[in-house]
Image (cartoon, rainbow, N blue to C red):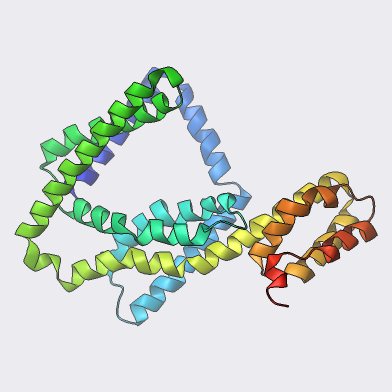
Length: 285
């Protein structure tokens, strides 16, 4: 573990113990959170992520790329990028550059910075001071941002975060320069490219998950007004029309949902579905 990881783990455990000591109800809150995370749907989602990542990792291992030294990076990627990216599908809109932004956010300059800054840290005593200070500034900025009277505080916190970021980056660049021979080694090259490979390979799973969420959301809304038979027939009609077209399905949901919900029978629902012609279909004609 790096000095930063040791310091982060120490302060996290310290805060947890302190919170439990001051308020025993924190344990009940953690139990409620665990019940949510380990309920049926999240477990299915986590299972798909684990299976997909395991298959991808086995493929990389078969090709001679993945090795046991990359296990920590793989686990960190799943917890920080993989799971978060799947939960971001709720932000998908038909006319947005969602997947482009998602890819860029995973493989842009921040990947380089996170890699170098994670490898080349301050001495342990410095990390013990820096980690809580940065966490405090981040929380202060979030709280102050939502309060109109504290915008000055928010700006000050953000400014200090930028300053701290530059200091960390300068220290990392200095460490990388002093260790330039090892920096360009094959092990470091693999550590650097691994999150990029995982992020790109995860796009099909994210697309299918976004498609599933959109179909499920539509079915849930239909079931509020219509009985199970009409809902099932309507969803089959939608599925036959849009299949794997996430953009077309999302356009339908965003632009014609009110028309669909105002229908009184399955035939009216089918007429609404079949009458829809959006830009995605016009471009194919």
